[in-house]
Picture 1 (tube, rainbow, N blue to C red):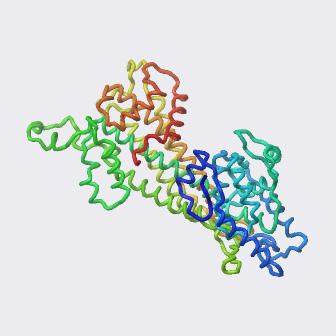
Picture 2 (picture 1 turned 135 degrees about the horizontal axis):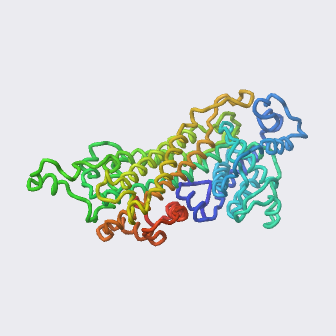
Picture 3 (picture 1 turned 60 degrees about the horizontal axis):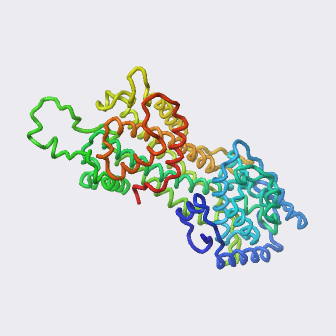
Length: 515
Protein backbone atom coordinates (compact mmCIF):
# COMPACT_ATOMS: atom_id res chain seq x y z
CA UNK A 1 0.00 0.00 0.00
CA UNK A 2 1.23 3.50 -0.87
CA UNK A 3 0.47 6.07 1.83
CA UNK A 4 -0.20 9.71 0.98
CA UNK A 5 0.16 12.67 3.27
CA UNK A 6 3.40 12.78 5.17
CA UNK A 7 5.94 11.80 2.50
CA UNK A 8 6.43 12.88 -1.08
CA UNK A 9 4.40 10.93 -3.61
CA UNK A 10 6.99 10.12 -6.29
CA UNK A 11 6.70 9.42 -10.00
CA UNK A 12 7.36 5.74 -9.31
CA UNK A 13 4.63 5.70 -6.64
CA UNK A 14 2.27 7.26 -9.15
CA UNK A 15 3.20 4.72 -11.83
CA UNK A 16 2.56 1.84 -9.42
CA UNK A 17 -0.88 3.22 -8.56
CA UNK A 18 -1.85 3.68 -12.22
CA UNK A 19 -0.18 0.79 -14.02
CA UNK A 20 0.14 -1.86 -11.29
CA UNK A 21 -3.09 -1.06 -9.42
CA UNK A 22 -1.32 -0.66 -6.09
CA UNK A 23 -3.68 0.31 -3.28
CA UNK A 24 -3.53 3.79 -1.81
CA UNK A 25 -3.83 4.60 1.89
CA UNK A 26 -4.06 7.65 4.12
CA UNK A 27 -1.23 8.42 6.50
CA UNK A 28 -2.80 8.73 9.96
CA UNK A 29 -0.67 11.67 11.05
CA UNK A 30 -1.61 13.56 7.89
CA UNK A 31 -5.25 12.57 8.34
CA UNK A 32 -5.28 14.15 11.79
CA UNK A 33 -3.97 17.36 10.22
CA UNK A 34 -6.80 17.23 7.67
CA UNK A 35 -9.25 17.04 10.56
CA UNK A 36 -7.47 19.87 12.38
CA UNK A 37 -7.71 22.03 9.25
CA UNK A 38 -11.44 21.32 8.94
CA UNK A 39 -12.12 22.10 12.62
CA UNK A 40 -10.16 25.34 12.38
CA UNK A 41 -12.10 26.43 9.29
CA UNK A 42 -15.41 25.65 10.98
CA UNK A 43 -14.45 27.77 14.00
CA UNK A 44 -12.68 30.57 12.14
CA UNK A 45 -15.33 31.14 9.47
CA UNK A 46 -18.00 32.10 11.96
CA UNK A 47 -18.95 35.80 11.63
CA UNK A 48 -16.40 36.46 8.88
CA UNK A 49 -16.66 37.04 5.13
CA UNK A 50 -14.59 34.31 3.48
CA UNK A 51 -14.47 33.72 -0.25
CA UNK A 52 -16.34 30.66 -1.39
CA UNK A 53 -17.88 29.93 1.98
CA UNK A 54 -20.39 32.73 2.34
CA UNK A 55 -19.76 34.60 -0.92
CA UNK A 56 -20.41 33.94 -4.57
CA UNK A 57 -17.58 32.73 -6.80
CA UNK A 58 -15.26 34.47 -9.24
CA UNK A 59 -16.55 37.90 -10.27
CA UNK A 60 -19.63 37.31 -8.10
CA UNK A 61 -17.57 37.15 -4.92
CA UNK A 62 -18.95 40.60 -3.98
CA UNK A 63 -22.30 39.00 -3.25
CA UNK A 64 -22.79 37.66 0.26
CA UNK A 65 -24.65 34.39 0.64
CA UNK A 66 -27.03 33.98 3.57
CA UNK A 67 -26.31 31.49 6.33
CA UNK A 68 -29.17 29.17 5.37
CA UNK A 69 -27.86 28.87 1.77
CA UNK A 70 -24.13 28.32 2.28
CA UNK A 71 -24.24 24.53 1.93
CA UNK A 72 -26.54 24.67 -1.09
CA UNK A 73 -24.05 27.14 -2.58
CA UNK A 74 -21.45 24.34 -2.83
CA UNK A 75 -23.88 22.00 -4.61
CA UNK A 76 -24.83 24.83 -7.00
CA UNK A 77 -21.16 25.33 -7.85
CA UNK A 78 -20.58 21.66 -8.63
CA UNK A 79 -23.69 21.26 -10.74
CA UNK A 80 -23.37 24.53 -12.66
CA UNK A 81 -19.75 23.86 -13.62
CA UNK A 82 -20.33 20.26 -14.73
CA UNK A 83 -20.35 21.60 -18.25
CA UNK A 84 -17.64 19.63 -20.04
CA UNK A 85 -17.86 18.46 -23.62
CA UNK A 86 -15.94 16.46 -26.20
CA UNK A 87 -14.57 13.00 -25.51
CA UNK A 88 -14.72 11.35 -22.11
CA UNK A 89 -11.20 10.92 -20.77
CA UNK A 90 -9.93 7.34 -20.50
CA UNK A 91 -10.40 5.86 -17.03
CA UNK A 92 -6.63 5.88 -16.53
CA UNK A 93 -6.53 9.68 -16.77
CA UNK A 94 -9.56 10.04 -14.53
CA UNK A 95 -7.90 7.88 -11.89
CA UNK A 96 -4.74 9.97 -12.16
CA UNK A 97 -6.81 13.09 -11.57
CA UNK A 98 -8.29 11.60 -8.38
CA UNK A 99 -4.86 10.62 -7.05
CA UNK A 100 -3.61 14.17 -7.65
CA UNK A 101 -6.65 15.69 -5.92
CA UNK A 102 -6.30 13.36 -2.94
CA UNK A 103 -2.61 14.20 -2.61
CA UNK A 104 -3.39 17.92 -2.52
CA UNK A 105 -6.09 17.48 0.13
CA UNK A 106 -3.77 15.36 2.27
CA UNK A 107 -1.39 18.30 2.61
CA UNK A 108 -4.07 19.52 5.09
CA UNK A 109 -4.51 23.10 3.92
CA UNK A 110 -7.93 22.78 2.26
CA UNK A 111 -10.30 22.66 5.22
CA UNK A 112 -12.20 19.68 3.81
CA UNK A 113 -13.99 17.08 5.90
CA UNK A 114 -12.41 13.63 6.20
CA UNK A 115 -15.35 12.23 4.23
CA UNK A 116 -13.82 13.66 1.04
CA UNK A 117 -10.44 11.94 1.35
CA UNK A 118 -12.04 8.69 2.50
CA UNK A 119 -14.37 8.66 -0.51
CA UNK A 120 -11.58 9.48 -2.96
CA UNK A 121 -9.44 6.70 -1.49
CA UNK A 122 -12.30 4.22 -1.81
CA UNK A 123 -12.96 5.16 -5.45
CA UNK A 124 -9.26 4.97 -6.40
CA UNK A 125 -8.82 1.54 -4.84
CA UNK A 126 -11.98 0.18 -6.46
CA UNK A 127 -11.16 1.71 -9.87
CA UNK A 128 -14.39 3.68 -9.92
CA UNK A 129 -13.46 6.54 -12.24
CA UNK A 130 -15.66 9.60 -12.84
CA UNK A 131 -16.67 10.44 -16.41
CA UNK A 132 -14.68 13.58 -17.10
CA UNK A 133 -14.75 15.42 -20.41
CA UNK A 134 -11.70 16.70 -22.23
CA UNK A 135 -13.06 20.15 -23.06
CA UNK A 136 -13.79 22.79 -20.46
CA UNK A 137 -10.85 23.76 -18.28
CA UNK A 138 -8.79 26.89 -18.85
CA UNK A 139 -6.44 26.09 -15.97
CA UNK A 140 -6.69 29.36 -14.07
CA UNK A 141 -9.02 28.77 -11.12
CA UNK A 142 -7.69 25.31 -11.62
CA UNK A 143 -9.30 22.70 -13.82
CA UNK A 144 -12.75 23.91 -12.82
CA UNK A 145 -14.89 22.02 -15.33
CA UNK A 146 -13.00 18.73 -15.19
CA UNK A 147 -12.96 18.77 -11.40
CA UNK A 148 -16.64 19.73 -11.28
CA UNK A 149 -17.40 16.40 -12.95
CA UNK A 150 -15.37 14.73 -10.17
CA UNK A 151 -17.42 16.70 -7.64
CA UNK A 152 -20.63 15.60 -9.35
CA UNK A 153 -19.68 11.96 -8.85
CA UNK A 154 -18.62 12.54 -5.25
CA UNK A 155 -22.13 13.78 -4.42
CA UNK A 156 -23.58 10.69 -6.09
CA UNK A 157 -24.60 12.21 -9.42
CA UNK A 158 -23.24 12.00 -12.97
CA UNK A 159 -21.62 8.90 -14.41
CA UNK A 160 -18.59 6.72 -13.74
CA UNK A 161 -16.44 4.28 -15.69
CA UNK A 162 -16.29 0.90 -14.01
CA UNK A 163 -14.83 -2.22 -15.63
CA UNK A 164 -14.64 -0.37 -18.98
CA UNK A 165 -18.33 0.51 -19.02
CA UNK A 166 -20.19 3.71 -18.21
CA UNK A 167 -22.74 3.53 -15.39
CA UNK A 168 -24.83 5.97 -13.39
CA UNK A 169 -22.79 6.87 -10.32
CA UNK A 170 -25.51 5.85 -7.91
CA UNK A 171 -25.67 2.37 -9.45
CA UNK A 172 -22.01 1.69 -8.70
CA UNK A 173 -22.17 3.39 -5.30
CA UNK A 174 -25.06 1.10 -4.40
CA UNK A 175 -23.08 -1.93 -5.62
CA UNK A 176 -20.31 -1.19 -3.12
CA UNK A 177 -22.50 0.40 -0.43
CA UNK A 178 -20.74 3.75 -0.87
CA UNK A 179 -22.29 6.79 0.74
CA UNK A 180 -22.16 9.95 -1.44
CA UNK A 181 -20.47 13.03 -0.04
CA UNK A 182 -22.52 15.45 2.02
CA UNK A 183 -21.17 18.99 1.93
CA UNK A 184 -19.91 20.22 5.31
CA UNK A 185 -18.47 23.68 4.63
CA UNK A 186 -16.47 24.25 1.41
CA UNK A 187 -16.01 20.81 -0.16
CA UNK A 188 -17.49 21.94 -3.48
CA UNK A 189 -15.03 24.78 -4.00
CA UNK A 190 -12.14 22.73 -2.58
CA UNK A 191 -12.74 19.96 -5.14
CA UNK A 192 -13.06 22.35 -8.10
CA UNK A 193 -10.24 24.79 -7.33
CA UNK A 194 -7.06 22.97 -8.27
CA UNK A 195 -4.63 21.77 -10.90
CA UNK A 196 -5.32 18.07 -10.41
CA UNK A 197 -6.55 17.27 -13.93
CA UNK A 198 -3.52 18.73 -15.68
CA UNK A 199 -1.23 17.32 -12.99
CA UNK A 200 -2.63 13.78 -13.11
CA UNK A 201 -2.52 13.69 -16.91
CA UNK A 202 0.92 15.28 -16.84
CA UNK A 203 2.31 12.62 -14.52
CA UNK A 204 1.16 9.88 -16.90
CA UNK A 205 2.68 11.84 -19.80
CA UNK A 206 6.05 11.87 -18.09
CA UNK A 207 5.91 8.14 -17.36
CA UNK A 208 5.10 7.40 -21.01
CA UNK A 209 7.63 9.91 -22.35
CA UNK A 210 10.32 8.07 -20.40
CA UNK A 211 9.31 4.87 -22.17
CA UNK A 212 9.46 6.60 -25.55
CA UNK A 213 12.95 7.90 -24.84
CA UNK A 214 14.09 4.43 -23.78
CA UNK A 215 12.81 2.87 -27.01
CA UNK A 216 14.13 5.58 -29.29
CA UNK A 217 17.57 5.28 -27.74
CA UNK A 218 17.48 1.51 -28.27
CA UNK A 219 16.29 1.85 -31.85
CA UNK A 220 18.99 4.44 -32.52
CA UNK A 221 21.56 1.98 -31.23
CA UNK A 222 20.12 -0.81 -33.40
CA UNK A 223 20.15 1.28 -36.59
CA UNK A 224 23.78 2.16 -35.90
CA UNK A 225 24.47 -1.57 -35.74
CA UNK A 226 22.59 -2.20 -38.99
CA UNK A 227 24.65 0.33 -40.92
CA UNK A 228 27.94 -0.59 -39.25
CA UNK A 229 28.46 2.89 -37.83
CA UNK A 230 31.67 4.07 -36.23
CA UNK A 231 31.71 4.21 -32.43
CA UNK A 232 33.24 7.62 -31.80
CA UNK A 233 30.01 9.67 -32.05
CA UNK A 234 28.74 8.23 -28.75
CA UNK A 235 32.18 7.92 -27.13
CA UNK A 236 32.88 9.36 -23.70
CA UNK A 237 35.73 11.44 -25.08
CA UNK A 238 33.60 13.21 -27.70
CA UNK A 239 30.57 13.87 -25.53
CA UNK A 240 32.26 14.90 -22.28
CA UNK A 241 33.55 18.11 -23.87
CA UNK A 242 29.89 19.18 -24.28
CA UNK A 243 28.75 19.99 -20.76
CA UNK A 244 25.12 18.83 -20.87
CA UNK A 245 23.86 16.18 -18.47
CA UNK A 246 21.35 14.71 -20.91
CA UNK A 247 23.78 14.36 -23.79
CA UNK A 248 26.32 12.56 -21.64
CA UNK A 249 23.66 10.32 -20.11
CA UNK A 250 22.42 9.28 -23.57
CA UNK A 251 26.00 8.63 -24.71
CA UNK A 252 26.71 6.56 -21.61
CA UNK A 253 23.60 4.41 -22.10
CA UNK A 254 24.40 3.91 -25.81
CA UNK A 255 27.85 2.67 -24.85
CA UNK A 256 26.28 0.23 -22.39
CA UNK A 257 23.78 -1.01 -24.98
CA UNK A 258 26.38 -1.46 -27.73
CA UNK A 259 29.25 -2.69 -25.62
CA UNK A 260 29.19 -6.25 -27.03
CA UNK A 261 27.91 -5.51 -30.53
CA UNK A 262 29.88 -7.20 -33.32
CA UNK A 263 28.64 -4.71 -35.92
CA UNK A 264 29.81 -1.33 -34.65
CA UNK A 265 33.17 -0.34 -36.11
CA UNK A 266 36.24 1.29 -34.58
CA UNK A 267 37.31 4.28 -36.68
CA UNK A 268 40.98 3.73 -35.89
CA UNK A 269 40.86 0.27 -37.49
CA UNK A 270 39.29 1.51 -40.71
CA UNK A 271 39.92 5.16 -41.50
CA UNK A 272 43.01 5.77 -39.37
CA UNK A 273 44.80 2.70 -40.78
CA UNK A 274 47.19 3.61 -43.65
CA UNK A 275 46.59 0.23 -45.30
CA UNK A 276 42.95 1.21 -45.98
CA UNK A 277 43.62 4.66 -47.40
CA UNK A 278 44.98 3.87 -50.87
CA UNK A 279 41.92 5.08 -52.79
CA UNK A 280 40.56 8.38 -54.07
CA UNK A 281 36.87 7.80 -53.37
CA UNK A 282 35.76 5.85 -50.31
CA UNK A 283 32.70 3.63 -50.50
CA UNK A 284 32.12 3.99 -46.77
CA UNK A 285 30.85 7.34 -45.54
CA UNK A 286 33.48 9.04 -43.44
CA UNK A 287 30.68 10.30 -41.20
CA UNK A 288 27.12 8.98 -40.85
CA UNK A 289 24.00 11.03 -41.53
CA UNK A 290 22.95 13.29 -38.68
CA UNK A 291 20.03 11.09 -37.62
CA UNK A 292 22.59 8.39 -36.80
CA UNK A 293 25.59 10.47 -35.76
CA UNK A 294 23.85 13.15 -33.65
CA UNK A 295 21.71 10.88 -31.46
CA UNK A 296 23.29 12.10 -28.22
CA UNK A 297 22.84 15.74 -29.18
CA UNK A 298 19.18 15.22 -30.21
CA UNK A 299 18.02 12.91 -27.42
CA UNK A 300 20.10 14.68 -24.75
CA UNK A 301 17.85 17.75 -24.44
CA UNK A 302 14.81 15.47 -24.54
CA UNK A 303 16.21 13.60 -21.54
CA UNK A 304 16.80 16.91 -19.73
CA UNK A 305 13.29 18.11 -20.56
CA UNK A 306 11.71 14.97 -19.11
CA UNK A 307 13.83 15.30 -15.96
CA UNK A 308 12.74 18.93 -15.49
CA UNK A 309 9.10 18.09 -16.13
CA UNK A 310 9.22 15.33 -13.53
CA UNK A 311 10.64 17.69 -10.92
CA UNK A 312 7.97 20.32 -11.54
CA UNK A 313 5.04 17.90 -11.77
CA UNK A 314 6.04 15.98 -8.64
CA UNK A 315 6.25 19.32 -6.81
CA UNK A 316 2.77 20.20 -8.05
CA UNK A 317 1.41 16.77 -7.11
CA UNK A 318 2.58 17.26 -3.53
CA UNK A 319 1.46 20.88 -3.26
CA UNK A 320 -1.64 22.72 -2.09
CA UNK A 321 -3.34 24.11 -5.18
CA UNK A 322 -6.77 25.39 -4.15
CA UNK A 323 -7.96 28.77 -2.87
CA UNK A 324 -8.17 30.04 -0.22
CA UNK A 325 -5.49 28.23 1.76
CA UNK A 326 -6.79 27.16 5.18
CA UNK A 327 -3.72 27.47 7.42
CA UNK A 328 -4.64 25.95 10.75
CA UNK A 329 -1.01 26.16 11.92
CA UNK A 330 -0.88 29.96 11.63
CA UNK A 331 -4.56 30.27 12.50
CA UNK A 332 -5.40 32.22 9.37
CA UNK A 333 -6.90 31.96 5.88
CA UNK A 334 -4.96 33.26 2.88
CA UNK A 335 -6.48 34.18 -0.49
CA UNK A 336 -4.46 33.97 -3.68
CA UNK A 337 -3.93 31.93 -6.82
CA UNK A 338 -2.33 28.56 -6.08
CA UNK A 339 -4.86 27.04 -8.48
CA UNK A 340 -3.16 28.70 -11.46
CA UNK A 341 -1.62 26.07 -13.74
CA UNK A 342 1.27 27.89 -15.42
CA UNK A 343 3.96 25.61 -13.98
CA UNK A 344 2.27 22.52 -15.39
CA UNK A 345 1.24 24.15 -18.66
CA UNK A 346 4.78 25.28 -19.48
CA UNK A 347 6.28 21.88 -18.69
CA UNK A 348 3.67 20.08 -20.77
CA UNK A 349 4.40 22.33 -23.75
CA UNK A 350 8.12 21.70 -23.39
CA UNK A 351 7.51 17.97 -23.08
CA UNK A 352 5.22 18.04 -26.12
CA UNK A 353 7.84 19.81 -28.24
CA UNK A 354 10.57 17.43 -27.06
CA UNK A 355 8.41 14.40 -27.84
CA UNK A 356 7.66 15.74 -31.30
CA UNK A 357 11.39 16.08 -31.92
CA UNK A 358 11.85 12.49 -30.77
CA UNK A 359 9.26 11.34 -33.31
CA UNK A 360 10.99 13.41 -35.99
CA UNK A 361 14.29 11.64 -35.27
CA UNK A 362 12.53 8.28 -35.55
CA UNK A 363 10.95 9.29 -38.86
CA UNK A 364 14.30 10.36 -40.32
CA UNK A 365 15.97 7.12 -39.24
CA UNK A 366 13.02 5.23 -40.73
CA UNK A 367 13.42 7.11 -44.00
CA UNK A 368 17.11 6.24 -44.03
CA UNK A 369 16.32 2.54 -43.74
CA UNK A 370 13.64 2.67 -46.43
CA UNK A 371 15.66 4.66 -48.96
CA UNK A 372 18.16 2.33 -50.63
CA UNK A 373 19.98 5.26 -52.23
CA UNK A 374 20.81 6.55 -48.75
CA UNK A 375 21.71 3.36 -46.89
CA UNK A 376 23.18 1.51 -49.93
CA UNK A 377 22.80 -1.86 -48.22
CA UNK A 378 19.05 -2.59 -47.97
CA UNK A 379 16.44 -3.12 -50.72
CA UNK A 380 13.95 -0.24 -51.29
CA UNK A 381 11.41 -0.06 -48.46
CA UNK A 382 13.25 -3.02 -46.88
CA UNK A 383 11.25 -5.16 -49.28
CA UNK A 384 12.12 -8.79 -48.66
CA UNK A 385 9.97 -9.97 -51.59
CA UNK A 386 10.13 -9.27 -55.34
CA UNK A 387 10.91 -5.65 -56.16
CA UNK A 388 8.07 -4.06 -58.10
CA UNK A 389 5.71 -6.89 -57.19
CA UNK A 390 5.92 -6.63 -53.39
CA UNK A 391 6.03 -3.42 -51.37
CA UNK A 392 7.67 -4.14 -48.01
CA UNK A 393 7.25 -1.22 -45.60
CA UNK A 394 6.26 1.30 -48.28
CA UNK A 395 2.66 1.68 -47.08
CA UNK A 396 3.68 2.02 -43.44
CA UNK A 397 5.94 4.97 -44.20
CA UNK A 398 2.94 7.07 -45.18
CA UNK A 399 1.42 6.52 -41.75
CA UNK A 400 4.63 7.47 -39.97
CA UNK A 401 5.09 10.62 -42.03
CA UNK A 402 1.54 11.86 -41.61
CA UNK A 403 1.58 11.14 -37.86
CA UNK A 404 4.81 13.09 -37.34
CA UNK A 405 3.31 15.96 -39.33
CA UNK A 406 0.35 15.97 -36.94
CA UNK A 407 2.75 16.08 -33.99
CA UNK A 408 4.48 19.09 -35.47
CA UNK A 409 1.20 20.98 -35.82
CA UNK A 410 0.08 20.01 -32.32
CA UNK A 411 3.32 21.39 -30.89
CA UNK A 412 2.16 25.00 -30.91
CA UNK A 413 2.35 25.95 -27.20
CA UNK A 414 -0.81 26.38 -25.14
CA UNK A 415 1.14 28.28 -22.48
CA UNK A 416 1.07 31.47 -24.58
CA UNK A 417 -2.52 31.00 -25.70
CA UNK A 418 -4.36 32.73 -22.88
CA UNK A 419 -7.91 33.99 -23.55
CA UNK A 420 -9.52 36.13 -20.81
CA UNK A 421 -12.91 34.92 -19.62
CA UNK A 422 -15.15 34.84 -16.52
CA UNK A 423 -16.09 38.53 -16.94
CA UNK A 424 -12.34 39.21 -17.19
CA UNK A 425 -11.82 37.98 -13.63
CA UNK A 426 -9.66 35.26 -15.16
CA UNK A 427 -7.79 37.69 -17.37
CA UNK A 428 -4.69 35.52 -17.81
CA UNK A 429 -5.01 31.75 -17.79
CA UNK A 430 -2.74 28.71 -18.23
CA UNK A 431 -4.71 26.36 -20.50
CA UNK A 432 -2.87 23.66 -18.56
CA UNK A 433 -5.34 20.83 -19.06
CA UNK A 434 -5.40 21.49 -22.81
CA UNK A 435 -1.60 21.43 -22.80
CA UNK A 436 -1.52 18.11 -20.92
CA UNK A 437 -4.12 16.49 -23.19
CA UNK A 438 -2.36 17.65 -26.36
CA UNK A 439 0.91 16.34 -25.00
CA UNK A 440 -0.74 12.97 -24.39
CA UNK A 441 -1.90 12.91 -28.01
CA UNK A 442 1.62 13.64 -29.24
CA UNK A 443 2.97 10.86 -27.00
CA UNK A 444 0.34 8.40 -28.26
CA UNK A 445 1.20 9.36 -31.84
CA UNK A 446 4.88 8.84 -31.18
CA UNK A 447 4.35 5.28 -30.00
CA UNK A 448 2.78 4.62 -33.40
CA UNK A 449 5.74 6.12 -35.24
CA UNK A 450 8.22 4.13 -33.14
CA UNK A 451 6.19 0.99 -33.78
CA UNK A 452 6.64 1.43 -37.53
CA UNK A 453 10.31 2.23 -37.00
CA UNK A 454 10.80 -0.98 -35.03
CA UNK A 455 8.99 -3.11 -37.63
CA UNK A 456 11.39 -1.76 -40.25
CA UNK A 457 14.47 -2.33 -38.10
CA UNK A 458 13.53 -5.98 -37.61
CA UNK A 459 12.95 -6.50 -41.33
CA UNK A 460 16.36 -4.93 -42.01
CA UNK A 461 18.04 -7.25 -39.51
CA UNK A 462 16.46 -10.25 -41.20
CA UNK A 463 17.57 -9.08 -44.64
CA UNK A 464 21.15 -8.79 -43.41
CA UNK A 465 20.95 -12.01 -41.38
CA UNK A 466 22.90 -10.32 -38.60
CA UNK A 467 20.86 -11.41 -35.60
CA UNK A 468 23.81 -13.14 -33.93
CA UNK A 469 26.03 -10.08 -34.32
CA UNK A 470 23.68 -7.74 -32.46
CA UNK A 471 24.43 -6.54 -28.96
CA UNK A 472 22.80 -8.49 -26.15
CA UNK A 473 20.21 -5.78 -25.55
CA UNK A 474 19.41 -5.36 -29.25
CA UNK A 475 19.02 -9.13 -29.63
CA UNK A 476 16.60 -9.14 -26.68
CA UNK A 477 14.47 -6.49 -28.39
CA UNK A 478 14.60 -8.47 -31.64
CA UNK A 479 13.56 -11.74 -30.00
CA UNK A 480 10.71 -10.30 -27.90
CA UNK A 481 9.13 -8.40 -30.78
CA UNK A 482 9.63 -11.15 -33.35
CA UNK A 483 7.58 -13.36 -31.02
CA UNK A 484 4.53 -11.18 -31.74
CA UNK A 485 5.54 -9.88 -35.18
CA UNK A 486 7.15 -12.57 -37.38
CA UNK A 487 9.27 -11.75 -40.41
CA UNK A 488 7.14 -11.15 -43.51
CA UNK A 489 7.85 -11.37 -47.23
CA UNK A 490 4.46 -11.41 -48.89
CA UNK A 491 2.21 -8.32 -48.63
CA UNK A 492 -0.40 -8.49 -45.89
CA UNK A 493 -2.31 -5.78 -43.96
CA UNK A 494 -0.06 -4.46 -41.22
CA UNK A 495 -2.42 -2.29 -39.16
CA UNK A 496 -3.10 -5.03 -36.60
CA UNK A 497 0.62 -5.75 -36.26
CA UNK A 498 1.25 -2.07 -35.63
CA UNK A 499 -1.44 -1.93 -32.95
CA UNK A 500 0.09 -4.95 -31.22
CA UNK A 501 3.60 -3.54 -31.33
CA UNK A 502 2.40 -0.16 -30.08
CA UNK A 503 0.80 -1.89 -27.09
CA UNK A 504 4.05 -3.75 -26.47
CA UNK A 505 6.05 -0.51 -26.47
CA UNK A 506 3.56 1.25 -24.18
CA UNK A 507 3.45 -1.53 -21.58
CA UNK A 508 6.76 -3.42 -21.67
CA UNK A 509 8.97 -2.64 -18.68
CA UNK A 510 11.41 -5.54 -18.96
CA UNK A 511 13.68 -3.87 -21.51
CA UNK A 512 14.93 -0.64 -19.98
CA UNK A 513 18.28 0.64 -21.21
CA UNK A 514 18.35 3.27 -18.45
CA UNK A 515 17.99 0.67 -15.70
